[in-house]
Each structure stands twice: as structure tokens, then as C-alpha cells.
Length: 307
Image 1: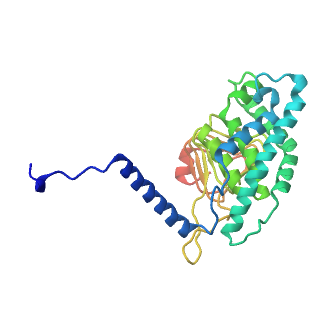
Image 2: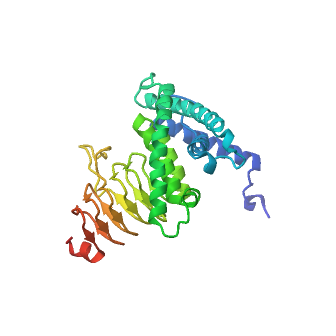
């Protein structure tokens, strides 16, 4: 083989690795220069630490069922106090990160709220969260003939697991920590297949049966005793834009589901419509209009446009 026909030399493994490291550094810089305003290092809340915090909070809410397997009743209060203390330490740290990031995004060096005060406010919501979750567990037990006990529901049902995370995330969302709330919601989504935006308002006694594929949007409002089956979507029908073509965020765009309504598997309800109290939406229905209380809507009805 002559020198002119020799194959190109292969870069050494170390040189190739270094070239990729440098290329990735350049892409990071380009992204940060375009999309961020200042700041270096770890600026955002940690998924791993927040997952641990939710596990602690779940154990503190239900210590003898979701706490450590070695916990004895006589040590219950000590465990709850210790675990809540650890969870609040994590929340203060992660809330400070979110608040500083939010301040930098608006070009300000001063966080809009105090992380320690937010953590204290959140701590005070936990007794009320426990009351709501008790109603959810009881609704699942009463609504499922296969459930043999409330303990089985709490330990096994993905809908309850998703609602535990949602009840916690919703309180954080209301307090002004939407990023932490969204991380918690998406961790539950990954675990259960149930996607509930932390902004959604869900009344007491909610039962999400089976659950896989359920989607509940940010501005959805569910009343008391609502029952939802797998693969139900409570979504938006359209997305309004401003004069520059950017999406207008935060506008009410998801359904209102009144007390005791039932939505069966595969149904899709879109837009700011109202499902009246006690209405039943049948399986695989596609619905973009309001229905009065007590209605029964089947797939044939939705296709025909009647109630």
C-alpha cells in the first residue's frame, strides 16, 4: 500500500473523549448564554432529594403503613417528629434554590419569598392533607368490590399513591413553589402512570381506579366523590396565544367535574366545560361540551352531539 492510499489515522481514545467533552462544554455554554440569566453551579431543586422528601412525608402521614417496617406503635410520635424535621430541612433547602432561580429569571437578586416561612406554612397543611387522603382511601375501598381492606388500598393502589403525591404537591403549588410541585407530580407520574398537574384542584373522596393513562390538567377542578377510571383525559381543547404567537399561560382551560360524577375508561373531556353533579360519562366518550347534572353520556351520544 502506497502512502497516498493509506487509510486515515484513527484518533486515540483519549483524544476522541476529550473532543466530545469540549463539544459538550461548548453546547452547554451556548444554551446557558441563550436561555439563562447568570448563575453558576447547581441552581435547581434535586429530583433525588425531593423523592426522598416525599417518601419521608408519606411515612409521617401514615407511619404504621408507609413508615419503616421495624416501627413500633410506642415510637410512632418520635418517628413522625424526626421524619418531618428531616423533610422540612430538605424543603427549606430546595425551596431556596427554586426561589433564587425564579429571581434570576426575572433579573432580580432578591427572592420573592422566604424559604423557611414557606416550609413552615407547608408543615401546617399536613393534618388537612391527612384528612383528605383518608377520604380518598375510604372512597377507593368503598368503590372497588375487589378491595378487601383500607390497608390493602393504601399499600397497593396506584391511584392512592398518585393522590398522596398530588395532595402534597398541590399545597406547594399554592404556596408559590411550582417547580418543586411539578417535580413531585412527575415522580408520581413515572411511578404510577397517572399524570396529575399540581395545579389541579381535587375535592375529597377522589377514587382513581386502575389509573394508568389518566391525565388531569393544571386548571381542572374536581368536586367531592369524583370517580375516574384508567386512560381518562381531562385536558385543554385549545391554547390561546398573545399578539406575538406565544401561548397564554395560566388561563382556565380544563374541565370542571362536579361532585359524585363518574368518568369511565378511555373518556376524553376537553376544554373549560362542566360535568354536572352525579353525571356519568361512558367509556371512550369524546366530549367538548358541558353536560347537566345527572346526565348519562354514552359514546353514541357524544358522536351524535346529544346528551
